[in-house]
Length: 193
Image 1: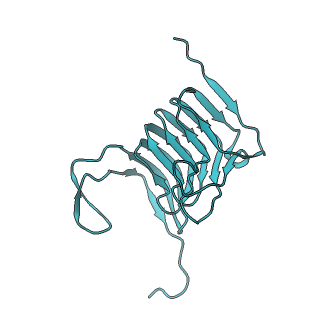
Image 2: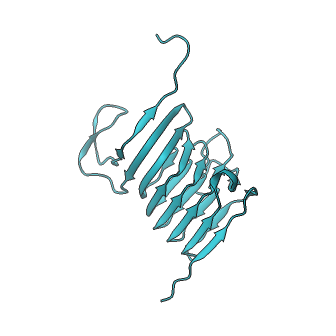
Image 3: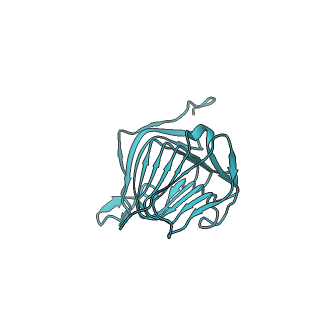
């Protein structure tokens, strides 16, 4: 069987304000800009995490390179910039920004390399198995996570892990593996008591 690969090049310095969906019946697509700082996909929609994404991927064997994917809905609620609901998707040198639920890493196996991901509440969510080799995660409440390699397996672990929110032992928590990770919190001014 002859595979047909399609490369779509996104023009620089064009503010592409549209919602983009790559359907399941269109595998082997690559979206490519020249650099994320001047190649943009922007949308402004919120509340429904399945319908609000700026870019939604349902097709397998998808590649995205050097794009900024942004949802400008604001802080009023959930606003997904990127939803990946397909197997074998890879992202290289991308900037992914929103506020809440920025990246819906929905299902499948995914790879993120040299991407910048920014958000606040639950800014990475979903049930996918993904590897993040990401130099920067930026959490809008002031924490910068640097030098991160993160593996998120989709299936819950059978061992007991301590839940950081209530201190009780909870079975079947999802395991996050972080390697070479630094968390930097900006200095606070004012009273430290």
